Length: 285
Length: 344
Image (cartoon, rainbow over all chains, first blue to last red; front, side):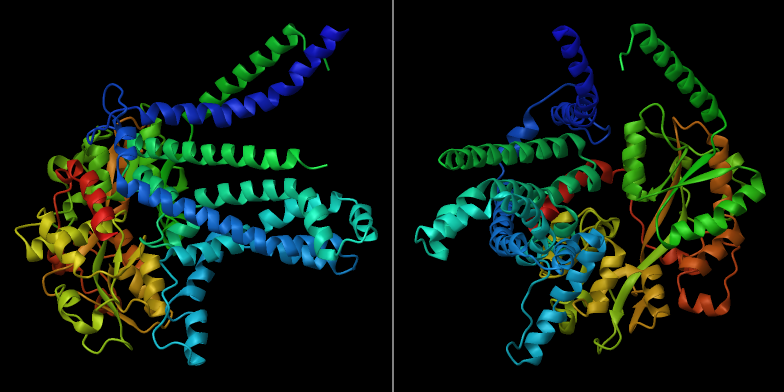
């Protein structure tokens, strides 16, 4: 009886396994193999295998500079979206109004427009003759335009806009699951609103913060369209460089090594982050 | 539901049967034609493909993407390429050719090739350049006092300083401009030391990934002068934008779409028929009308009003500056890398 149940359970995970192996493990394995191929300008790749692409990447200050910029950008976007998204999620979680659904639509509105269209809109807003510079000029606050387009700042602003819902939605689910009785109990014991928030609500919402932060960080450092269109050369990120290697220059082995290198760095950061946040969450009541 | 081994094997057999049916269906598959999106796809869909089918009886299916996508698909296809014909800029075609994916054209199957302008059929019949979009110097008529007349104006006209738009190195336009700079200021089009030094003098400039981005820069006014193709500027003019384009006195560059027979393609006769139809004089004239390319066929007749807007046509096609891309294949990775590090 137990054996039959186990057999049935095994069959149930087969579709998920097939998906994982077919769409994650095999493509990754193929990229790893490609990254170990030798380069050849007269063939897709040369004969034999080599670690030279990885050696070149890890010893190249130019690559490390772009890695640093990508990580800085990802970190900034994550922190700012958390700071902006938390109050919105908190407000929505406590809202008992018939306008709540309208606010939900506002929250997900950045996702309702196609990526390229949205990025073009940001180009218009951020350009030297765009909305921001135009407004500042007409107010007499600046004489020369502030450089926003083709800079890391421009990319960061646009990424914050699009990834805000990815922080708000997991946080909202988490905050709604926290019983209001807990905060009420804190207040009844004499704690101020701020103290109740800091000692009760905030710690209990850590799982939502953790999930939102990971989502936004990973999406930010792997974003391609926004940095490619708004970043120019000063805002070039690793994902743009990887695409340039693979698609513009057709250097598949070197591009694959660059992609694996970036994935490894991201994975390492996420593992460290998960360990740190898990430790913090273990202390929760 | 419990899946017995017998049932599993039956299902497997059914799948194999379906696959076999699929392979038979493949034998009657239409001829797959790769082309670009936007205006190009519209013209292919509405005019070119129906015309080809009517003229030759070949059923077709479009695959819309970028030349670089077609490269990836051909490379990934290995011995079973998804296309029998490749379309892409000549520098990209040269790379696939070097990798052994193409075979020479059978000129007996391309009677229209005899009417092509000089220089459009590659040495050894290794592909031909059927669609020509000349690149000149475009500028904002309302923001530029002295219209450019020479490529060197980009360096010499002070009003252009910091307001120039150039393609980024991933675009063929940047590679053309780099080689032109070497030719203008150095010992030749492979004098990259001089070319990089001169282009650094133009920094900071706006870099664009494709012509549409250059056009957007011109429209915003961030860019007031840029090397860009006639197609893009004519379309902006049609929308009433204050832009013009000139052919510099040294000659023009051009995006030249190279057509090649894919060695492992299954429909090479159809591929030849398609290329032959594409370089027909009337098809070329229609294409010029639709998206302002310069006819590659010497016998194409342009409407006088259109000819006035497209100065690079007929005998003027000889003003196109061309480079050898077959030998550039070995240099390309280092040039791209150098651009990233030195220009940004």
